[in-house]
Length: 281
Picture 1 (tube, rainbow, N blue to C red):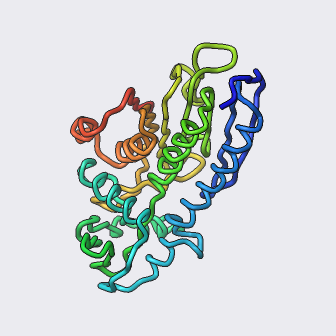
Picture 2 (picture 1 turned 90 degrees about the vertical axis):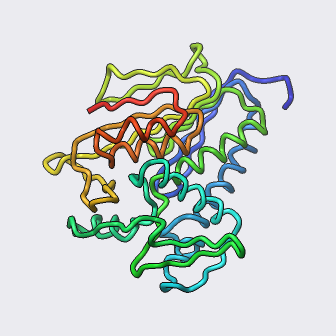
């Protein structure tokens, strides 16, 4: 990067993955910021065309339409993300599971039934290492990366920021997934807080933060997080905030702690490297 930088604030917004991503940067050249934004747009489109279950042109949408036991060849990226998701299912003791897409879709349609139990990733999906392919082992299995998709995107974006040497950046993805580099233009960190929890404040530099929430039935809004082991919707009016260097870890851990009962939290958290983890309600 050219050393002749300008102390000027830049902002750009993207619509991706059914949400909005906002990026703010300062103390950089506008030309560098514009180039980063162009590459971020390409990254977001590629991820959406790989792991979106709603985009009719995405690889995952194609995979989810396949029948039981059919051998489905996978791209290198989708294969990598599925292997990653399988490992997350293991280290969260099964409380994070991308194979529950069909159950989540029924919940969104108002079919909130305790009978919609997920059988678990290993019992519903077989990954074949020899030819990088997938087979569904049970009918009506649908994969959903909703609990880690934003983290995957932020991890890729973080690599771009390092490549372009942008040192002072704040990114908000859907107001629930945060990525920071460097400092605020008027301080030594990026301040972060939640409107519902004014006492919860973070001083961020090179961090990611994920906020996951469940909302009780008598509150406005609805959670789409379920307990994969019971099929129950997580109506416990809970907010979990996880701060980590790894955006994917932050996303998965915050989601898993919503789904898991309290007596499983300690065992799950031991499997992750994180800076801070707060149960706010």
